[in-house]
Amino acid sequence: MAILVEENTRLVVQGITGRDGSFHTLQMMEYGTAVVAGVTPGKGGRTFAGPDGAGVPIFNTVDEAVAETGANTSVVYVPPAFAAGAIEEAADAGVSFVVAITEGVPVQDMARAHAFARDHGTRILGPNCPGVISPGKAKVGIIPGNIVTPGPVGVISRSGTLTYEAVIHLTNAGVGQTTCVGIGGDALIGTNFVDALEAFADDGDTEAIVMIGEIGGTDEQEAAQWVKENLGVPVVGFIAGQTAPSGRRMGHAGAIISGSSGTAEEKMKAFEENGISVAKRPVDIVRLIQGVLSA
Figure 1 (cartoon, rainbow, N blue to C red):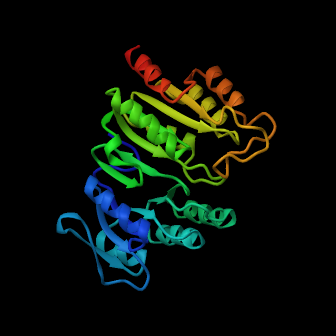
Figure 2 (figure 1 turned 120 degrees about the vertical axis):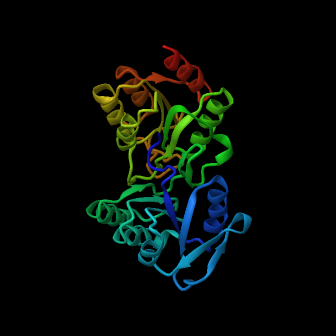
Figure 3 (figure 1 turned 90 degrees about the horizontal axis):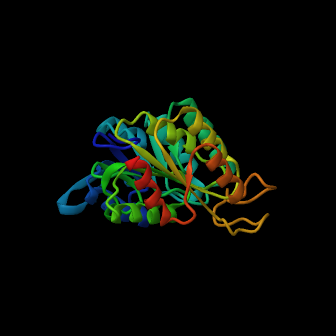
């Protein structure tokens, strides 16, 4: 099994003719994802040339794409000023899962888009995230397909780069993954740690979870409490930003320490108090995961 994306994922790419959209569409198709439609206003009726002669029909609207192809998932590769509108368009068309890759989406726009998606029963992943990949089944976003391998470990991360690093270490050690989820590091995201943990809790093939957090906010502490109260599989955690100074934003919009609640020390303490094994370095994740899997 897997979470969020799998063999039945039918993907529409919003912004398929742009630089990023076209590049990553080819990557997703080469991995085996069923990319059934693309959307670029004004370019409807054209065909996107995929690998091995495969063609993807391009539509002017998501509504048209869903009606013609039965797409159930969308990935957004459009400029920041238009990303929230693209998310809302997908939700309004009945798409159940939207992966927003775009970075720099205005917070006010995302507040509106999150409310709109929630009212329409649509799950958002992101924005400013690397997406999601279920090894051997489907990839939606920009996570490289050559670093993953099927197995029993779920991965959730706020950091795109650390997602890749952790997964590479796991794969090189022969520890495969059920699904790897990059939730994004913006202040307002759709799917948070607890949402992803709930999904993994319902996946019978996930035997352990890696959770990679960052400084800033209290999402990691809330997730740790949820793990203790609800989760039946072991979790290994890592917090990025252990040497970050207080009051300075580090990388992501959400990665800023305010008082003590957002510090790496506070988050690592919360992990340990709630039964989560804490890795001091990304490479240590492998040893800890191997330990809990063999226990």
